[in-house]
Image (cartoon, rainbow over all chains, first blue to last red; front, side, top):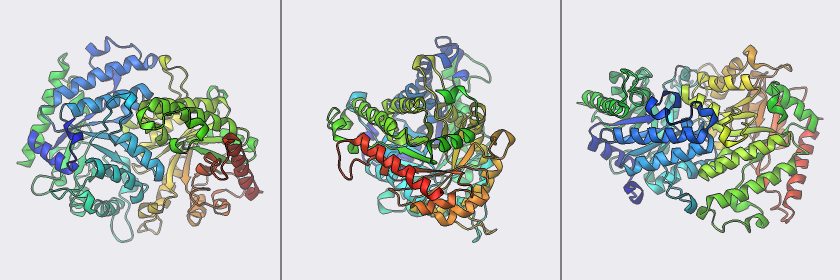
Length: 313
Length: 313
């Protein structure tokens, strides 16, 4: 776990990793038991509801296989906490094992848990979901390198997460503009001063993230922003409002975001965003159907890298 | 677990429980190891970081004691997921044991996890954090009766939670107006049509929650709203905008919300809200210091009940 022993700034680490791997891309780990390769499921329970621990063992095996398949091509992975939490505590244990395995493979890990609370509750989430918590009896349980957080509760709700991130060389991605159709009902509302709600969130995020202990050597903040790939019209404006934020851009691939749509998330130098694809890589073995699931996933990760590298050149 | 075998509507169950116990109050279960009674900690690890499982055993013992102490006085409890998640998977197991124990004592349980995501991720959260998930190998693991959810992602993000709630007689409380100072940075912004952001969220929540499968026999929706006790000026307006929503009102007691402040959260008939206190009840044995921690907690719960009952009469 090189990244844990190093106090380097998260944004600097992420930019360096993107350069090293050749493209700013991230694979989302959103395992769904019913869609796992038949060769894996054949060793698991026919009905995962009957045996959470056996289902989790198969999910772990799949995730470890995915990590090995994508590690040569992508700098980062984004495990989706919900997919693990649905199996209650055995699922959460597998989530932490996946985080650890990814870090040991040299991947940066963005924990997609979208936590948000205030005061001592936010401190507890920061400790449990982001920090390199180490309980002697649980073995090595490094937290992810970064965590997604929710913006609805306002800037003070982010502070406990920022404290942990600044102290441990970690990052945050706060929700600003999400990729789902219903997000307009809140995020696109027009304020009396002409801004949208998302614009207003972007501006206070930019301010919070500009604190001296938040900005790395390359000028980016450890506080990044989630900006969906399906809203290219908004991305250009948000890019201007948040010059120091790295954008985490979900929605590419299965959710309909196109390569051209994501251009607006980058700065002119081709930096400042990381593009995430989940299902289009994770379940690449479904179409065309193949039993070589790791090969199909590796190829999809390489394709993702190639697509994004192409639009940046 | 009477409430699980009954398909009765959540709002009807909550109103009946409030009437039965004599006041619409709820005790937040936000255990913090360092503040637990010395008599319990003496059997646990000196430093909880060294032994998560031993710390969790003490936390479980404390929570079970709290549940027994408050059950005669309050209709509902609200375990704070963050306080358990900070102990990773052993903490999550204790959280589920606390939920089960509370339900077995006849208490309604509001899981305070503030989850929010879209599509299949929201489905997974609804399955893991709200549904009566039953994995044969994990024993009885009923979900809570209701769950707090985050509104930032918009109405479509709530649908998977609403589906589970409607099918299983459960409820949701979506964040509208929170009790922390920084919440104004988003929730109080003025829209071009004169509403605040919180007003706009309230209006679409009211609409989403008015679907025929959401409204119970007493006219309240299974989709409730979180409205902090520290914003009485907003509560009256939000009460009008959300006639069918039960308000979950945190911030009473330790966060500074006063009894008079919460009046505006109720309808004229004295229904429609449930007032939550956490630290002022949970750590009541600290001031005045007493070794009879269960007695002090029981008294604080009885006081809470009395205070709220008094303002409603």
